[in-house]
Amino acid sequence: MDTTQSLFEGVIVLFVIILIAFALKKQDILKKELSLTLSQIVLKVTLPAVVFSALALHDFNSTFLTMSLIMALIEIAILFLAWLIATLLKFDSGEKGALMLVSAFGMTAFLGYPIIRQVFPGNALALEEAIVTSEVGVGLLLFVLGPFIAMYYGESKVKGSVLFSSVKKFFTTPLFFALIAGIGYSYLHIPQNGIAFTIAFKTLHFIGNANLLLVAFTIGLIFEVKKVSNMILFVSIAVVLKLLVKPMMALWFTDLSIFTEMMREIVFIETALPSAILTVVFAKQYNCRPDLVSTAIMVGLVFSIATMSLSFMYFF
Image (cartoon, rainbow, N blue to C red; front, top):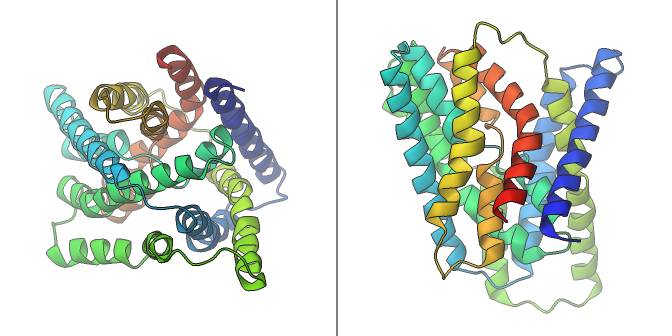
């Protein structure tokens, strides 16, 4: 099975599970409030299990740090492009900040890891690249620039203490601890035999396998059908920048001989993902047009099913 087919099937599988969760919510079998609990389980249990187990058993590849830098450069470039377009179209302050948030930052961890695992089944190296690229190249910038943009363009003053608290939060998340612990463990070269080792990593494996279902159910419970008639221009620009322009930038930035085909494919997938859910949290917290941000995320999620698969098929 080629990578394009695996990607298409993986996206469809994920979307079907999202629709099941959405239908269960509509039938009042599951409540929207459950999404908060599920997301916490994902961020504090299943994702850290995936991250640690993917990194711990293999030698760390420092080339992935270069990919992280490229990812960060792409996001900064998209931030500038979104700011420029919003300025030329004379968007107000809140609209400008909202466009920057949804155009630059994607669901690289929350949605990216399940898709990468579907596209590259059993390929620990692929998941390792996705993790390092996401956490170092996306996560840190999101926690630093996300609240700054929301404060600056929203209705709150920029406060250094808030920015410091956000950065501190990134470095104290279970995901970051799992990243550091996994990389550190990989350098110890501990023998991979013995009953304790087998039980520990089988446990992590089973916990990690629950990640796809929990992520899909979380998104399905959050998802809302909204009217976009009065937001068409904003949403259209956000979708084009996030789902089309950003992946094409990734192709251009990674068109170097030092990068393997798999590296380019993974960065392309990660840049083609819809906008990060955390952006709407920042937008709500600092009143930076959270209505626009949440709508753009939902529309982007739907369109990404087609754009990710079709663009991948075209370029690879």
